[in-house]
Length: 75
Length: 177
Figure (cartoon, each protein chain N blue to C red):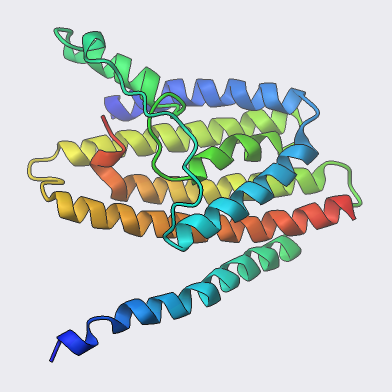
């Protein structure tokens, strides 16, 4: 019973991946549009906001990641 | 706490210096463009589970000769100074490579230094906590589980980069048009 169903999760994942990627980019774009500091009328403020945003998001990834990838990442 | 501090302090120092240095240079706009392109390219690669782009970095590891026969404190000092900042060792996920561009995009010495310090604190303490987690008896004993966890975090990293790519693209559009 399990053999015919074995490939379905993989197929579902492949079908969902482009949609999930698009949603991720759209979410990021929405975040950028809503960012209060990203005001192009003030010199530098947009760059500060975007830099802070990208760094903060990447920090979350690093912190979360270090909790998970363990020995592959440690001496 | 000693290990966390030992890893975090050199990381904060290195990243603060890097942030101040990059912030002093007129790189903010170029760095923003670079961040958007980098996040999009590596986000697609990692989220799709492909190997289109190799993760930038080095495979250098701390030589055994630097720690063999030394005291526990000296080993901790060597490892934490070299590995805490994250530049001189293997980083399996692409998000780390985005951080210098993000710091450079901050625009200014003060903003770059503050962002750099935050990144150094997060990276150094995160790596130390992972090390302590591994040091517990029985931790990480199953290699297959480690591979699966690594694949999971690579995908997560890819989607996070795609979110960053969207944000950076909007920031680019606001800055250049």
